[in-house]
Length: 186
Image (cartoon, rainbow, N blue to C red; front, top):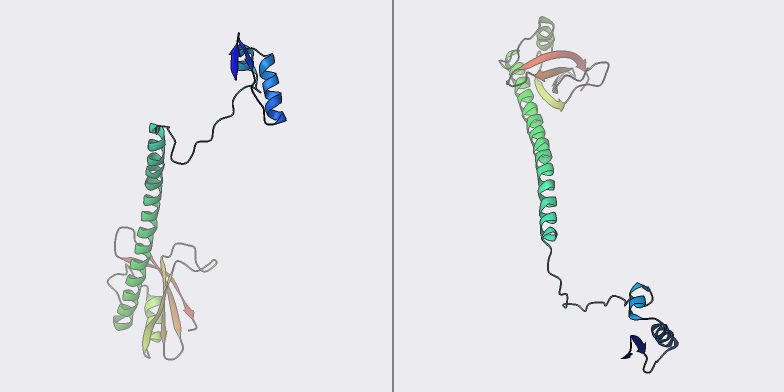
């Protein structure tokens, strides 16, 4: 295209769209073309590898901050679940140990108090060979349990009798409280 006193003259055109654009350009001055949407050149598509943009500092900082936020949230949550799993496992192991001690001597140094009713039930249960059947996590559902027990110890004997003992660990110690007990069938 040639310039001639503020107006644009077109050379040759290959399509009617080019021809229409050239007619429009001939009819407008440079100042008018700046404001006209038809005269604004379309953005060029950069070829692969020819991006001349420099990296903005926020393009570096934002992903790093996002990863840090995720780490500060995810790591404590994962740590909490790991500690809770370790505590549950420790309670199950301690409850099984209490069960073995009750079988051998009807007493355990890890129990705060054993009532006379429980001691009488244990004596009747221990008349034949008794073993720790299982240790269950948590408490029985209502109305038997009230959600306070950390574990339930189930002792069974060869006569087919069973005894479930609800245990709660005293926080910060290794001793347990007997919250209740009941007969169960193995």
